[in-house]
Length: 127
Image (cartoon, rainbow, N blue to C red):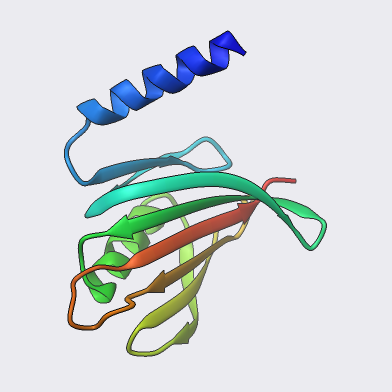
């Protein structure tokens, strides 16, 4: 348990040393992506439809279009192809697929069109 606490503190320290408003996410296959305009992030595991899923929740400081483009570019650089499922003025739901990798489900929502803040969630099956 002490090692987990030590690693958590070390990760927090190293994250604080990164460029401001940048978040790093380790994808299932071990690829690390960097995302811009992120002011806070939370990661957790949850079970949905009898499958364990990894979730990453982001609060960003940019509008919906900018956040979607930034996340899409980061994933496309790593071989993922986007397929928009739904889109309207305040939300975008996209599937990112890459052969041999878990499909990533991404949801983007701009709650207030008058503010440049967007919420984003990335998730994928772990097992």
